[in-house]
Image (cartoon, rainbow, N blue to C red; front, side):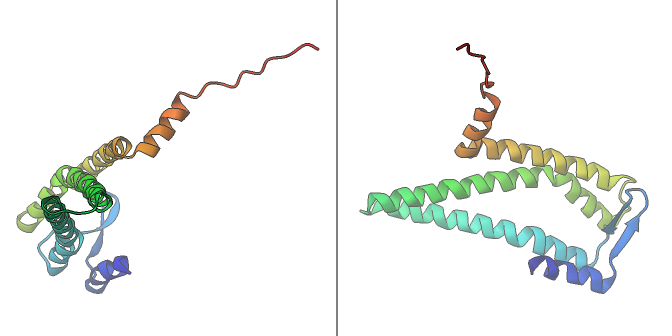
Length: 163
């Protein structure tokens, strides 16, 4: 439903065009209401909500440390805080390596973007996905043990026996 809500303004305003240099259908980088809508809907609202949840969890855990609480409740809150911390790290990786695309969008507000701007930005997005996979590998213990088990698997040796 959220994807449909996101796509409706693009379709209604006929903002999606075929870019010959990049060989892709995409919204042009220029100052319009739909571009501002994209920035708010896709970036600002999700990032601010993640930061707000992380901030509230930090306050909750600190408040729990000040008063007497059950150990189970405190440990559960600390685990949730650790989980949200990992999400913040993943989002930060995506945001930092998404800076070139943001620069190209901002350049489109005032001047024409470079010829292959989408390809350059896409390269950074792909690199960020590699870093996200590495971070997920580091943070997720079951995934790490499963992959290491497959890498270090001993070959099945079939030995003929004589009877």
